[in-house]
Length: 173
Image 1 (cartoon, rainbow, N blue to C red):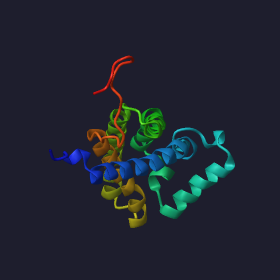
Image 2: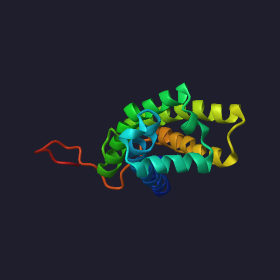
Image 3: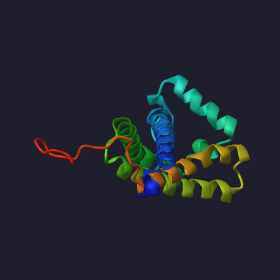
């Protein structure tokens, strides 16, 4: 009997590569969201000067007028990131590392939420004619990662080792 495409070594490898990329991203977001992005919503006096300087330097270097001007919709998107996406990023990093079955669900939730926010942000960047190519190239990977998270949430990747589903005391066939 032929193996199904979802059990092929190539498919499993692609899933693992996607999980590694997403793990690095979720760890990155777990750190950056509360330390840098939160300065968009919360007064900078609550942050160490070094973090305020990092955000200011980023704003100047990339010409990120959204971070500098803080339009209302952008502040709302950042609040969504802090209250919804940040906890999901932490949960997803844990889910990947511990191979939790719920990981695909939370990954899908994260991806859809991030993709929605990125659509609004990229619409403003492109529509305003204020964004440089450098700034667009800073935001576009977040759209790509969100699409990857959606796809990973929709696809169930088999484990390379069989899972014992028998109850205690029962024998496996």
